[in-house]
Amino acid sequence: MTQQHVLRIGQIVPSSNTTMETEIPAMFRMRERDSDERFTFHSSRMRMKKVVKEELEAMDRDSDRCALELSDARVDVLGYACLVAIMSMGHGYHRVSEKRLHGRTVENGAPAPVVTSAGALVDGLHAMGAKRVSVVCPYMKPLTKMVVDYVESEGIEVKDYIALEIHDNLQVAAQNPANLVDIYKRLDRSNIDALVLSACVQMRSLPSIQRVQDESGIPTVSAAVATTWQMLRRLELRAEVAGCGDLLSGKY
Image (tube, rainbow, N blue to C red; front, side, top):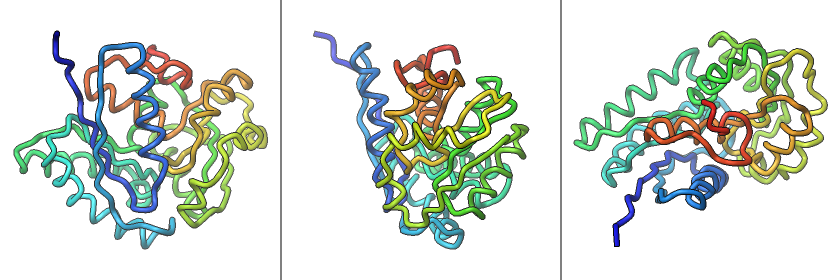
């Protein structure tokens, strides 16, 4: 009997995040049903309780330690999934973070590609050809505006956005993803190319992605979907997971 090749997925996780380790693995598990691929998941955590700029900056400084710890496990790809932490550090910072964290894995003798949810969302929208989007964020208005500015600095217009103004990260995860089916209807969706249903890996949206896309007729994505898409690409696997929106349709 041929032994299956198992790929190790490393995740850099905010200490209060309870969604990254459920939604991202869920998408990989869906792939396992239709293929011979198998995945394991390994996390290292950075302290963060409230989604405010000071805590996000302190947390980001801890990401180097996490990359080292995960490279000790010889992971095949490493995902840093706190979109707003990256975007709060200035325009284009996802490139700086990805390069630096990859460097930590190289120095440790276990080079692994690094994906950030911020970079994955931007790259995913570009891959979809999205020039104009509307966005749902759980953050307070100042952080939401910062996310909007970051996306626009990458050449993607944000037509409209909703800030749910939740500052406690556990409360972000506690939101019912089914509510997004109604929340997105408050957005201006005229002449947009894509809908970002959750610009946050902590805010659950996976059960609603395909439903909103089918109902609205607009390609629908989330930070978690984009992160999974980018991880699959870095692993040189076909970026396809059924029922997870346009980005994971296999076209990109």
